[in-house]
Structure formats: structure tokens, C-alpha cells
Image (cartoon, rainbow over all chains, first blue to last red; front, side, top):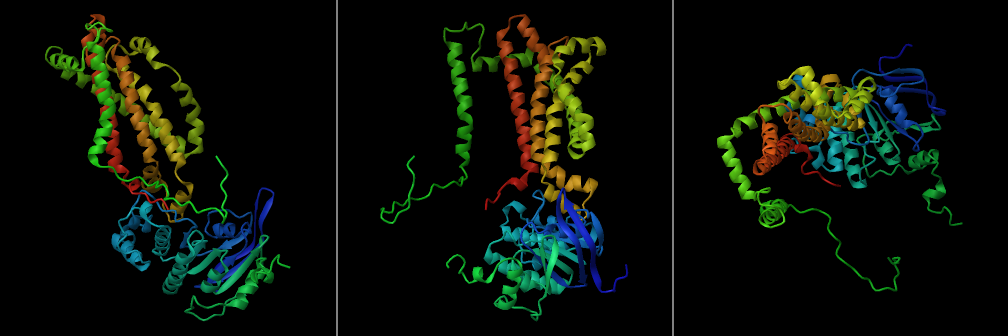
Length: 245
Length: 279
């Protein structure tokens, strides 16, 4: 398989079944270096499975996956080690200079958690814990950043702040990023391209051409309606006229 | 209970919600609460000892027991007997606890470990080793070996079952996350699995310590020349009931000591559990 130098993620004819249930069938995917791609789909559409396979957490049944070496994950839950202080969680698994206290402190400052370095994870709010998880993922300077609905469990207000934070951090660190989400606005704000996953296949690809830095105020209403319709949310639902006829 | 209905015609009966959050209690209240039951027991004990229900020769009052203990320090060499017993308990516990811990780790972490050990250890624990002490004496003589062996055999199991369970119950999602960040093998064990399993491992230690004291009594009551169990047996044989009580109190104090050690370890090692936010 020959790939151009700028390709960071390459997926060919990927399939996966859980027992009799075929979750993904014949997926083809290519991500350019530094690109931010969002993968949207209804729950059960196989998006988390695809992400886990890219990260090496699940095995594929068929097909080929090429990813860069340094990959990091942000999960839906923070998944912090409760028995380690916040800064130790950030440099978990790193040793030597890369895992020093300074490195952790600097990274925590970047995600807005200066002053929380010595807290126990159990004392953090949901948003704070997820910031630690993001710091833990970025402190390793990943070539590929895999995000599995990282803000799904957060409240709407915290989520907005986190969107802005993630956009800023991704522009600084510029990893190739794959974000799994069911939040259409999140996808449109953060991503360069959006893939819609339906019934285990990529049903639609959408290029988000809005220039960066983007504003959270932007409506994108045409693109939003388009994307939602691909996810099975039709105009009459959006207009609130469903069932009123 | 009547079904609740929210209707606009009803007058709004409002109430302040019951607050679930537990307020920190004052230190002196904690001590008062802790001492209520022991004080009641002491009062009941004193009343019983002074009453005509039990012959006063068979039951000393609490103060009488203290005096008895004091005299035993003088004429029965109590200090050295306590030392001998504690040494046996600690050495037996070290062997049994270490065995339970290591095998528990293996069994909790790996499928093959569980398949190799679990069924056999579950079967072995049902054997009443205390009943086999006469055999141990035949095999190992009357020295320290059979006593330490009984303690070890009795104390490995709580440690084994709690270590295996604790390790098995560590949140797999956190373990998976740690693995994605390159934490493997020994580092994973040391940084993630053991600290998170520690609460249950300490429960195992606490149970093992108590069981080791129980096994020690049994071990020492057979063909010993020293130790608290030996004193207890002698006192029984010569109907020195006050001494029996003194020995019982000594065992109770050892139990308290075991609990205190675990409390201390929890305070030192489980700081991360304090101040947990519920939200």
C-alpha cells in the first residue's frame, strides 16, 4: 500500500462483527496530517468501535489500519487513577524528564487547571476531571489524538468552554484528530471534515469550510440541517411541527 | 402512602428538603460515641460480678481483672509470654499473609492463576486445621513450627480472597486507559492496580490478623511451655478463673491493636478516598 507523505491515518476495507451483529462493514478512511475529523452517528452506529480499533484497543476482523506511533486517547469518562494526584495522572506512564513535575504543571496550566496539581481526582468536578484527561493525552505530543465523545457527560455550559479549549489546544499542538461525537454543533465547530456513520458504513462526508478561528456564535444552519438530516433528524423535527398535524 | 398529585387547585405545601450531606462531627463527640458501648459492657460486667447470680470466685470485676493482670506481670512473667505469642502470631501472619497476597495477585490478575489456585485454595480453607494440631505435633514436634504453621494456614485465606477480589474489581476502564498511555506490567501493578485494590487488601489484612490471633490460641493450648495460650490453659486447669479473664482481656486488646494497625495503614495509604465529591 503506497500512501502520500501527508497521510496519517489510512483504513482499508475494515470490518468488525460482535457475534452475529455486523458493526462495521467495509470502512475506508483517510486522514491527512494535522486534520481534525469528526465521526458522527447515532448510538450503536459503530463509531466508538472504529475509534477503538484505530487506537489498538479492539481488533479488526478484516481490513487494514495504518496509524502513526504516538496515539493518545480521551475517553468519555475521565478514567483517572483515583489513587494518584492530578499531576501524576497527567504524566502517567511517562518517565524521566518527559514525566517530570514541571511538564505536568505546565500542561495543567494550559488546560486551565493551575492550582489543582496536587488535588485528588475524586475532588474534581466533571469538567475539571476531563481537562486532566485532555492534559494527559496532549502532554505526550500525540501524532494522532483519538477522542471518544469526550464531552458527552458534561453539561451544556461546560461543554462550550471545553470546545473552545480543545480548538485552541489543537491549533497549538496540531495532532491529527479523530473525534467521535453525536453532537452536530460540536462537530461543525471543531472539525475540518465530518463523516456520518450509519449502519456500519460511512454514509456521508461533509467538508466544513468555515474559516478558523471559528466563533461559537456561528449558526451554520444550512450545514447543520444537512448533517442532522443524515442522522435521521428531519426538518419537521427541527421546526417543532412533528406530530402537530 | 397516598398517591401524590400535582394540581394547581391544591395549596402549595412547601418544605425544606432533608439534607443528606453528612456534617463533620466534633472530635469529642466521636470519642463519646466510641466509648458508649465499652462503658455499658464494663458497667454490665461489674454489676454481674458484684451480683449474686455468679459466684464471685468465678468472675472478677473489671478492676479485679486489672489487678490480676498486674500481678501476672510479676509472678507469671506475662511480658515475655506476650512477646512469645506476638512473635508467633506475626511470623505466622507474615508467611500466611504473604502467601495469600502473592497467590491472590496471581489469581486475580490472570485467568491461568485463577484456574490453577482458586478451587484448591477454596477446598483447603474448609479443612479445620485446628483439629489437625495433634498431627502437626507428630510431624513437626512441639517446637515453634507447628504453632506458626497453624497461624499461617488459618490466616492466608482472608488475604488471598480479598487480594484476588480487590485486584479483579479494579475498574477495567482505568486499567485500559493506563495501558493506552504505555503503563504496562510492573508499573501498571504498582501505579494503578495495587493502589486501587488496596482498600480491599487492607480488609483482608485486618481479617487475617484477627484469624491469626484465634489460631494462635488454639495452637498454644496444645503442648506449649509459654505464650498466652499456655497461661490460659494452665489457668483453666487450676481453676484460676481470674487469670482466665485476664487472658481473655489480653486477647481483646490484641484485637484492638490489629484494628488500630489497619486504621493507621488506611490513613496513610488511602488519602485519595477522603473528600470524595459526590456530583
